[in-house]
Amino acid sequence: MNDLLARVLESHGGLDQWSQVNQVTAQLSLGGPFWGWKGWPEVYADQTVQLDPRREFITFEPFTGPGRISSLEVAAGSPERVEIRDGDRLVDGRDNPRATFPAYENETPWDAVQVAYFTSAATWNYLTAPFVFAHPEVTTEEIAPWTEAGQTWRRLAVRFPDSIANHNPDQVFYYDETFRQRRMDYQPDVTGSPIAHYTHNPKVFDGFLFYTLRLVHLRDDGNVANQEFAPITIDVESVSVTRDQ
Image (cartoon, rainbow, N blue to C red):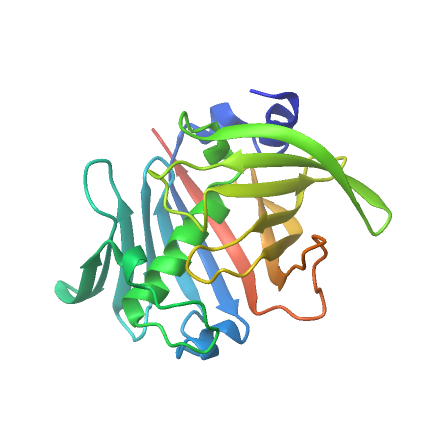
């Protein structure tokens, strides 16, 4: 483990402590015009999100209607699967939903399973970072620092394996002098847009540091973000963790 990652893990609550966590629950809302472009405005208002930090399983409730729950499960030896349920009734479900996305166009609608897959894979990774970086199949390397608005941030290049559903394999995370995350860069396979995703308002919940405001911006070829416009916003009201007994 490199020095930067070790310091980041410690500043977020410590890997030993995280290893005892078996469930994370968050109250959050996702906003911004992106969801309307895809045909689902307000779909992610006032959500209860539950995830398993030890395997990629996550649920959103309510999803597309009262009482409905979406789930994403990524398990070794099985196809990635999204399900939408209303109680015990399966409303919709699909294996390998990533392969079904249309070409890169902002105003091309997505169906409910595609929306659920995109958001579920992203949010599982957001809420398990930086601890997911210690996964045995994830590789990390400190790269050249970045200067922005008079500040210099250390950067961690992270490569995710195919076994973790995410925006795309290669991403970059930026940390300030207190080892708090300030930004992350990625380019989702399903949209093709280069993204600079800023993390704000860190807060400690149950001993772990989470970011309660996330603003997703486009970035140009010079790696500069257009911070005047955020197609996606994420507001986190609260987070709780459950530990092994």
